Image (cartoon, rainbow, N blue to C red; front, top):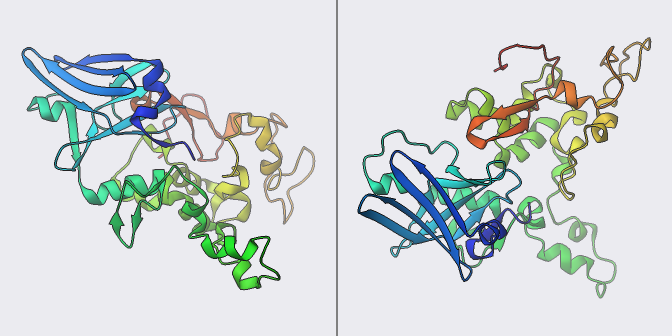
Length: 313
């Protein structure tokens, strides 16, 4: 998360792929990197537009998208993004057009300030102070203060030169671990999409698997919420994402009894799986292919999946 927003000139993907192209609707899209600067361009016949990219969003584990600015200072989203599985460009997710009305519409989407503030709020730290957006003073990526709030008082209190800091000073930062289960998942959902975010946007189908908090709370076992099912029960936000399914077995077994014929009990209400005793998530949190991302995402709706079933909304 600390690397999910970088200046385009520092984007390794663009440096290692100095000439990226794709075509759609008779428009030719290009990203050409020369001397560390990337020009995003589009052409059709004798029409051509080109702008230097300003920001790269995403580490590129799945994809990377880009913003640029015009002379008026307004932000624009490139309709072309890099996709790791494709190793080239395609339409930015949810931005594909079948019949653009102009070369400008085919190339970019104007991004209003309110949306820019939300984008940078999740990909950077302190991008807005007192409601004012400032892309020059912000801290790149998601750092400690993005989740824990301003840390100056805490740092001062814990400084080695400060003797006997008060408990209030030591605990002056916000700790998301103290949240109730539903609030904890919504806290993560502020950037990863909560239940309300998806519902109000009208999200449907496999693309909603990108919104892990939303899918999690649609699980039958979520009920009214449980500390054992919050996002941080499985994922330590201070560490790199663990991709080995077996690494999550201990979390699954904090709710489920370990093996048959052991019966469920009050503190372990989940029955034992009759099929396997390890790598639980490989069956019960299946991978779902999201076409617009050209990649598989783990569906956080915990369930017994059946072959050939429709995607569960």
